[in-house]
Image 1 (tube, rainbow, N blue to C red):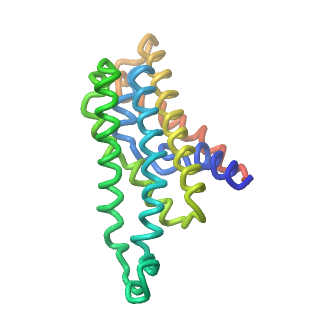
Image 2: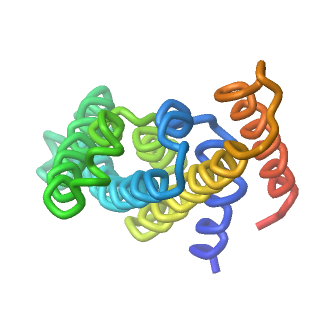
Length: 204
């Protein structure tokens, strides 16, 4: 039940886009059509699902204060938490590189349409934010971090695919000239954010 609560909360209540505004750059840039948004969304889910459990284990057994006690008493006082950012980013960059190679090999059209935003997943705030939230919330085990990663990834995926679908429709709508392009997109994102705020009243 705790896992289900964490999963639902990470999708709707703590949505990376609408609750924390993380990953907005690629969110706005790659949401012009559903196919491209779908590809990037799936990639983000995969990267989160792989990197968060790895970073959880690194944090628990290497980075946090006293984490090296398993090596012996003389290492128990070591605190490597200052290395968290660089270690987390290194893990994320490695996984993103693997994803980039796989997409380029098996889906060249998607790789071309995503362009620079595929390798930029490595510096997507939502990915690093997931690892930092995991560290801050001190999850009890690697299972909780994996559930949180999956929920956060799905939340980001739903947000970008929903916006892409709306933008495809508005392309054929009679939008006032000053609001065409990013103008109407910003208004749409704001309304979507307000809609997602309704989930914050749910007690899980």
